[in-house]
Image 1 (cartoon, rainbow, N blue to C red):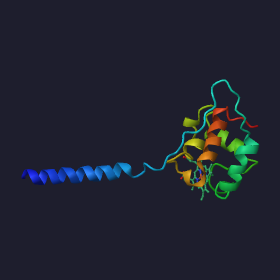
Image 2 (cartoon, protein in one colour; image 1 turned 60 degrees about the vertical axis):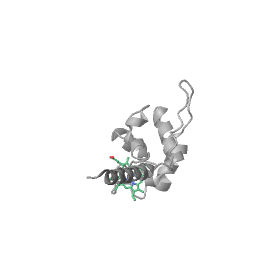
Image 3 (cartoon, rainbow, N blue to C red; image 1 turned 30 degrees about the horizontal axis):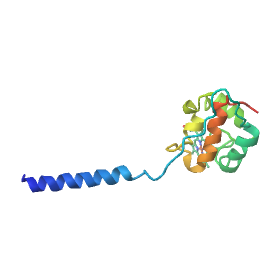
Image 4 (cartoon, protein in one colour; image 1 turned 90 degrees about the vertical axis):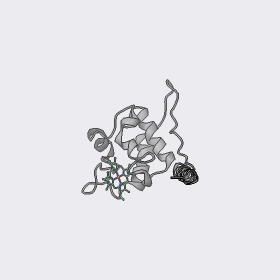
Length: 128
Ligand code: HEC
């Protein structure tokens, strides 16, 4: 192969790589707010989390449909006995990992709501 061809090939490769790497660059997902260690975070399961489940999740997640059952009466026991939650460790909790960017349930929730769930798990996943 002659040199000019090689140069064209390299240039084309570089341009392709540039476009490929730019694909998702303009969608910026902020990291969830994490309260400083030692401060009490006040996320309430019944006041803050249940309304999100009710509005966006229970149409699919209820008894007789998909697990976990996220209806107000059953959500807490469904996600704590079903191992969807690891208290204080949102990064290991399916209830959060399925909601964050790239998660299978991400399309049903906003970044802000997912951050609330992150904070609720981080604060100990209390039934408050
Ligand atoms: C349109 C229906 C639908 C909606 C709305 C929906 N889900 Fe799901 N969800 C599913 C299906 C189907 C599955 C099982 C297949 C899968 O994991 O993708 C599932 C699985 C899950 C799982 C288990 C994932 C795992 O890896 O075991 C969790 C947790 C979950 N959803 C939470 C939620 C939450 C929280 C919401 C609301 C923000 C929500 N889902 C909204 C249909 C839905």
